[in-house]
Length: 122
Image (tube, rainbow, N blue to C red; front, side, top):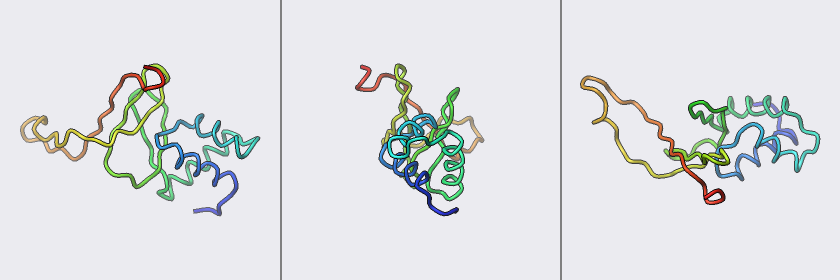
C-alpha cells in the first residue's frame, strides 16, 4: 500500500471507530472533523487503496451506494434503517440455507439484510 498520510489515517480511524458500514459521504463528513478541507476525490482514492490493501471491506445492499467497513470481521449480516438509511452490523445468523436451494444446487455463501428502524428513529 502507499505511504500513510494524514488523510488516510483519518479515513481509516473513522471507519474503525464507526462500528458499522459507512457511505462515502459519511466517511467524508466524519474525516473532515480532523482534516478540514478534505475532498471527496481524496476519500475515494484512499478507499480504493484501503480496499486493495485488505484493510476495509465493501458492503453492497440492493439499490444502495456502496458502504465500507473494517475488514476481517467474523461472518455477519446487516440492518438498514428505513428512516435514516444508516446501516448497522448484525452478528447473528440463521445458519445454513442449503435446504432452501433447489435440488441439485449448491449454496456457497449467503447475504441477509434486515430492514426496519434503528433506536434513534424508532
